[in-house]
Image (cartoon, rainbow, N blue to C red; front, top):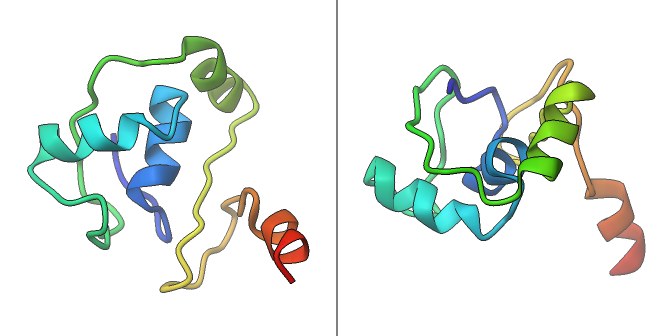
Length: 89
């Protein structure tokens, strides 16, 4: 799968694998750290989906989370950002 601008490994884990825990398997499979900044357009190999219902929900709704603050993101949803900002303010 291709990394979109502003996506983190956790965004991709939720989107493609249906679980944040999938970030660890994703990192190991691709030889990267969970803290590495991802480059848009970079191809990542995907491990087995851990929660197919969540992954299918993201796919069917075309939700592509991109929560990195390091890049400007156009036409990509920022999931959880506002809710967490309000919760922890």
